[in-house]
Structures are given as C-alpha cells and as structure tokens.
Image (cartoon, rainbow, N blue to C red; front, side, top):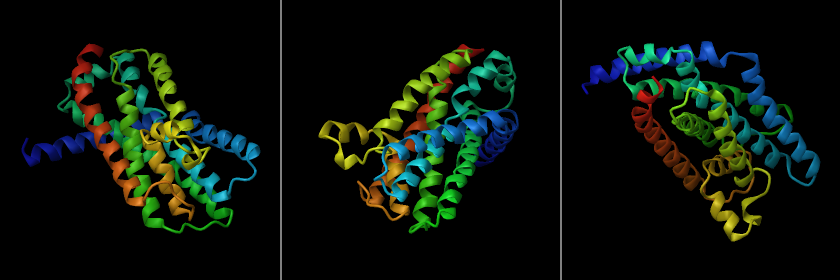
Length: 251
C-alpha cells in the first residue's frame, strides 16, 4: 500500500477511535469499573497483608488499573456493533479491517493510559516519589498498547452477543491478575508458578511499576520492557489478522 494510502487509513482509524471514546468510553459506569475493581482488590489485599510495603501495593494498584481499564470495553465493541447493525456500515466504509481494529485499540489505549494517572496521583499524594519516571512512562505506553490489543483479541470470536465475550474476557483476565505477581512476589513462588507467571504480560508491567517506584524487581528492566513490547506486537498482529478472518461472520 502506498504511503498516502497508509496515511489515509490512519486518519480513518483516528476517527474510529474518537467515535469509540465518545460512544463507549466516556461513560460513568465504564470509568467506575476501571477504577473500583482494582481499588477493591487493592484494599482487600492491603488489609490481608499488612507487611507489604507501600510501593509494592501501589505498583500492584497501578498494574491492575491499567490492565482493567485498557481491557474494559475493547472486547465487546465488535459484538455491540454487530448487534446494533452498525458494523455493516463500518465494513462498507473505505477503511481496512486492520485500520478498524487499530482504531479500537487506539481508543482503549487513550482511555487506559489516561485513567492510570489516578493511581500515580494517589502515590504522589501519599508522599511517594517515582524513582525512574522514564521507565514508568515507557511501561505505561507499551502496556496500554499491549492490554488494548489483548482486549480486541478477545473479541475475535464471531458472535454478536456481548455477554458471551464478557464471559470469555473474565475467564482470561481475572486469572492473569492472580498469576502475575501482583499480590505475591514471583520470587516466592515455586518453579511451576514462576514459569506460569512468565507467560503473562501483566507480570512484566507490574515489574516495571515496581522498578519505577524503587522496589526490587524479578527481571532486569530491559527484559521487562522487551517482553512487554513483544507481547504487544504479537497481540496487535494476531488481533488484526484474526479479525480479518472472522469479521465477515458477524455481518
């Protein structure tokens, strides 16, 4: 495709992202969902584990907030639009399927990265300092892309029923929270637990968050960033390719 064609598709993807933000994301329940679930999990863990350090707790809250907000709506956008018959109009528009998927990812990226500023503000209000702000900013940007792409990947099954996709999404998202070292340090897990944790992208973002707040990390920071970027690329490419195959089944 010529560069002008790519530029045109990117502009259309931005339009799709704006549409998604206005219709799906700027809603009270969505924002509350992205903040309250991580907060309640954080409070429950904090009460049950009083010996954990504040940076350890805040880094877990930061990881959960980004993960939940970036995957809050993206899995159900395609089913919603298929159910409302608006996906047919989008498919007939001069926009490629990868650009359409990228628009969904872009909207989720903006939403996830923006809401993540809340736990950072909480940390600063509690008197904490960010030891490595560049690493934290880079981790949030890559993590937001990774988790947003994961959200669109979860919407690949060609169904027009949002509850079916939400069930699938929950079956994948909640186990990831508990195997990613957010509540229990990975180094304290048995060998099989460490192996499973290394397969989760959330593990590497939580590690970046802890490094940024001055905590000890499980992996070298360059490994965390490289692994998170690799997951982001794999999810992004897989989401675009698989939606190209399944979108005709939704129409």
